[in-house]
Amino acid sequence: MSPLSQFFLRQRAELQRGPATLWLNPPGDLPWREFDHSGSFLAFSQDHVSASALRDTGAAVDFGVLPQAASPWQRLVITLPREKQRLDMLLRWAATALGEDGECLLAGEIRAGAKSAAKRLQQHFVHSRKIDNARHCVLYSAHSPRGDQEFCWQQQLQYWPLDLLTPPLQVASLPGVFAQGALDAGSQLLLETLAQQSFIERPRVLDLGCGSGVLGCWFLRHRPAAEMVMTDSSALALAATRATLKAARQHAQVLASDGLRDVQGRFDLIISNPPFHVGHQEQKQLSQRLFAPLRDFLKPGGRCIMVANRHLNYHRWLEQLSGHVHVLAQTSRFQVFCLSA
Image (cartoon, rainbow, N blue to C red; front, side, top):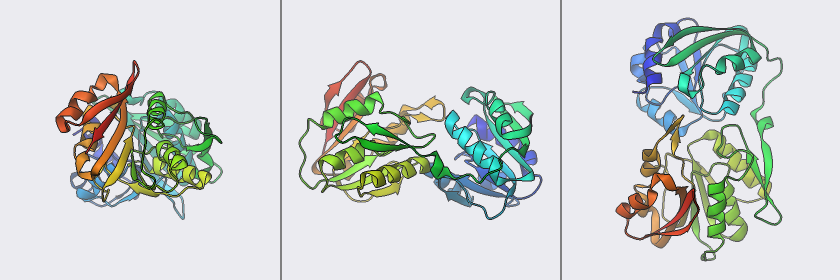
């Protein structure tokens, strides 16, 4: 169990008091049956993996970008996200979704930025205070929201041009989605490498961990007849991908998935710039879990072409998974691998 989930168990009495509570992004490893005996919580997660894990422990969880409510909430709990821009988005929403006499609780690990979150609370609430500090975590309480307008998450969409294409592809960004506002160096190396490869005219392609949809939409520009499937565990990433597809007038199946777990069928090509962070921690095991069943999803002769940070030593791990691995391109920071079926 993570330190944050242990901290939440310590705060159980504080969190359970008062009216029915909406909890945004409870940790996926929280033992829900042990925590919520009275059914006083409604849970909402922006992460498909966490939502699935919580459902397995008895929680009723909705998955999406942000909750919708017909009337103001009287109590909210927000788990501190890793990204500061996403925290601002959640607090802006909370300030408009909370009733005048309601309470917003915010909790997170200190090393994930919980101390600096206090200043952000003050931007959106008139009154805020620290309730507890233990297990390297902090719990804040905030009252009197400053929000006076209805919050619409679609207004958070911003677009930036992918100049590798002519005309440029307009890529949608949302707070918390990887490489918001610009093409990251790893994806650029991957796209430059893909441009040098040959593909059949109508391939079935999977963009695994699609983020804002850059890789899949770039590929569709080059192979419009491709059958494209784009997956991610983040509701914000899936929303950004749909917006990118709409701006490009392209079509693809957009799917919430825990790696390959929710994907069906086999593919001629799988492309990916896989994540290697959970919260603030770098976890190579996350990407390894994504790719362990990889060969079961490739058609005969199919390929997976992915980019990864060199220091993670993916090459050796992928060779253990399959002997058909070679490096297509590399820089001082990144390597592009090809795994063949």
